[in-house]
Amino acid sequence: MTEILKTIELIEDKRQEKKVRHKLLDIVVIVLFAKLANADDWEEVEIFAKSNEEFLRQYIGLENGIPSHDTMQRVMGSIAPEYMQGVYNKWHELVNSNEGETLKKIICIDGKTMRGNQSNGQKANHIVSAWCDMDGFCLGQKKVEEKSNEITAIPQLLDVIQIKGSVITVDAMGTQTEIVEKIKQKHADYTLAVKENQKNLYREISEYFEDVELLKEIKCNNGYRITKEKSHSQIETREYYQCSKIGWMQEKSRWKGIKSIGMICKTTEQSGKQVTESPAKKCQ
Image (cartoon, rainbow, N blue to C red; front, side, top):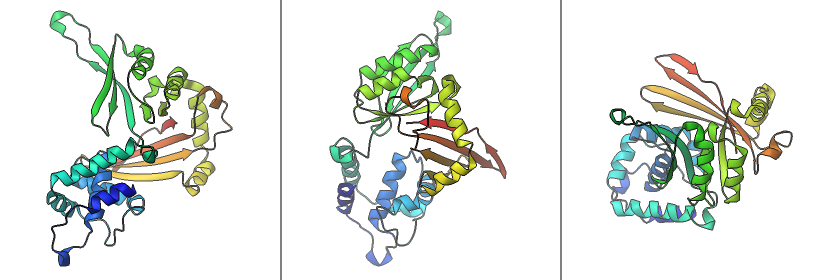
């Protein structure tokens, strides 16, 4: 991260010094992290910054707090594109270097059903894709006859793409011990959705996070994070719980390289009404 900050400091600040309340470095770092977190517009960039202020202060001063989205949009508009390209290039360079070990690429394995051509009597195709958000492109695809065939297609897809040093995310259907073996064999890590198709793993994780006292302990041990985002006239609150003390799990030996378990609780508020979804379970 030090190298990225040095690159940002090279950007020319064309503002009048007496009128500057927020450092250029602060604004660029906020925008960089927000964009990597898929913020789509300037209001979402501001919401991201306010929700993650404590995290951002590890890298920038924020002497006058979080800039408004209007300020960030105006300042970023004054920066020559080649400067920002240099920042993104440095980020990618770091991610792909040994120094960037903590800045791992996230590769999402996802299956989608494509519409068939009904006039020709064609069946709908099901495509399993590997998508890297950071690079912004698809790394590979595999066509399967049915969605249920994802389980066999995912290892085949992993064989033909470079995943070393990355984090692979897979939905619940892909949460299989054979797929985990393949990921670890190729020197990558994983984050898996856990549902009832893996009954024993799901039961152990669910029962653990039902313990109110354990949730309090997780919060005290920095295993808890909360974010709030405004999206389509509603506010989404997500609570993240993570526990790495999993020596007690009977399922631990079946899942190669498993380091922690987690739970995500999502609450949506719109027009004064709150809707809480069933908590999502994870292992990684």
